[in-house]
Amino acid sequence: MVKKEMIAMLLAGGQGSRLGVLTSKLAKPAVAFGGKYKIIDFPLSNCINSGVDTVGVLTQYRPLRLNQHIGIGMPWDLDRSFGGVTVLPPYEKADNASWYTGTANAIYQNLEYMEYYNPEYVLILSGDHIYKMDYEVMLDFHKSSHADVTIATYQVPMEEASRFGVVITDEQGVIQEFEEKPEHPRSNKASMGIYIFNWKLLHDALIEMKDVPSCDFGKHVIPRCHEQGKKICSYDYKGYWKDVGTLGSYWEANMELIDIIPEFNLYEEFWRIYTKSDNLPPQYIAEGSSVTKSIIGEGTEIYGNVENSVIGSGVKVGKGAVVRNSIIMNNAEIGDGAIVDKAILAEGVKIGKNAELGVGEEAENSYKPAVYSFGLVTIGENSVVPDNVKIGKNTAILGVTTPDEYPDGLLASGGSIIKEDDE
Image (cartoon, rainbow, N blue to C red; front, side, top):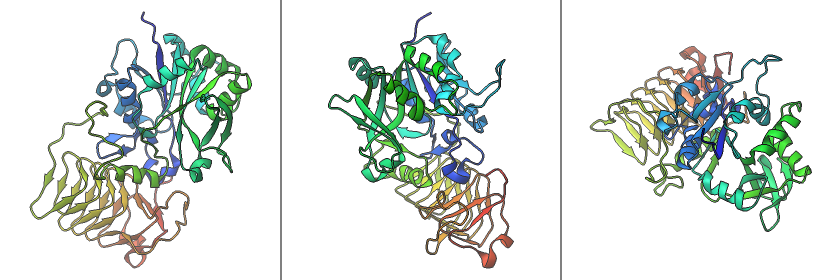
């Protein structure tokens, strides 16, 4: 049996509650991105492009669609007889059955998987970031630094640093101090949640800390290794990296794809992003319609006007309809004469004729103000908006809605119609 030098453990069990109704029925890594992809396609593609061909994907929250998407890993060339991709849900053990309660706890519960490959190094990844990174370069840095643990870091604006775990390093990049989401950060070097561990160290640390409640890498394991005098280095990543954990950052990252010179280029030959694709007919743009500065998926039919938007596959934009500054996911339908402005429509949404989305002035959302902001209209999967209604900004809709739920034909800015219990 050929020993694997490095295997990857990809944490993809998160609910992504800050994406609101977009994740009411599926895990955050399974959310669509860029008209064609799922968020998880990015770390999976990075793995195979970096020569990492053994990946354990840890799933938990609503995993069905994620599992279907990954399948046996064929689109990423991860359908291997030894290695390849393995989906690792929580499972019942002889002594107790337990859900994954923290990032490190999830990895601990899969020690057996890692022991099977007995690698020299383990790469820990998060399933909800958009970026391209060569993990082999990070591994070379880890080896040349003689580090026990290497953390990938990214310089964020100082005013955003309190959202992240930040590190303070010496001139050689050796980490001296950690601050987990500090109120007054002293550094803007943020942890990207990407770690390389020497396998023996990780193995021993996880066993030693197995009883820590909700055991987490950033809060528990890394500080513990630091206390024990282990050498922890910071690998400075300079490329594009976006944590699409909020509706605002998710919308921005999609919009950045359609810039004249996109910061994040999906069209590079040498670093492809792979995904599971359906065999669909080509897109159709009807006479009299117009499309400017947009991404349009396969099988989409456009009879109206689309500008500055990211449109998935199998979407239908009706006659006289206008879509601008919006993200429309697969198989959504926008009725004739409808106007959709700065909205995120999940898969299978139906917008009635002459409906208007994104009208009026902004107002704070009364249901979940921290989630539904950024001036967006967010509509969850398979929801229906009736004909002739108007919807304001910072609004959320989930479910099949009827005209009587819109007083005077309007859902005012800051309002929500959430019809399903599980949001």
